[in-house]
Image 1 (cartoon, rainbow, N blue to C red):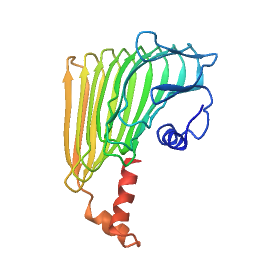
Image 2 (spheres, one colour):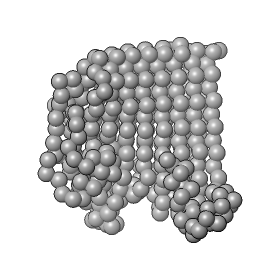
Image 3 (cartoon, rainbow, N blue to C red):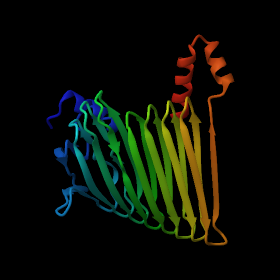
Image 4 (tube, helix red, strand yellow):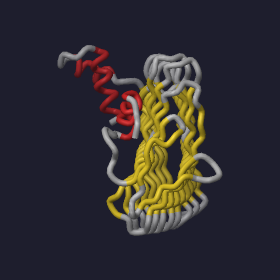
Length: 307
């Protein structure tokens, strides 16, 4: 792989990569492949009809990983990428995605990644998606991820969705349908600042007995930024669903939480929670008595909240 120092820094931010990862990977840089490797159990091939990848994981694959990060450093570059993941039955894998944009120009840079997951019966997946933006240019850093999750019986998927810094506009759309015994766990962490806008939409259908979903978002809105969290869980069987939004609002920030539940079965058990508030004064005072400034105390509280 031939990457400059900015691209390497972006990879560290979105995929925790300091060198070529073990296992299967595809690293995309400025709309081109910067490196790819398949393994005996995980095959990565390019799509023929559109820009994107097919990642096929053999049944029974255990303790292996796939890294597919994207980095962009060209101002004005816009792309849409379609990646499909086929996770074989009874496999247990980690998938690391994410995108970092460094825009030092005056034109907007945008990456829209459409990811579709087909999780086989009894399979377990941990999916990590991190978004990061940097650069001093006036052009925006725009990321619009779309995620589709199709879960077979008794499968498990854990999704860690993180966006902490530098993304000007994002619309994150996630849909999922679960068969009997499947379980989906989502943990979103988000911080916006300046004039940034972030919209997160989740729509989860629990279609089989004992299917369950737990969708939780923690966020901080600073300066004049705006956030919207829209999560709906539909229970079509004897199932369990929970959605929660816990947010800190600061400065002139704005937050809209729209939790939604739809029960179409008498044994569907669904819950939602939403809380928006400022940092408690007693928390600041306690940390300031330990020698921290007010700004340092705020940062400590925010970092702990988003951890």
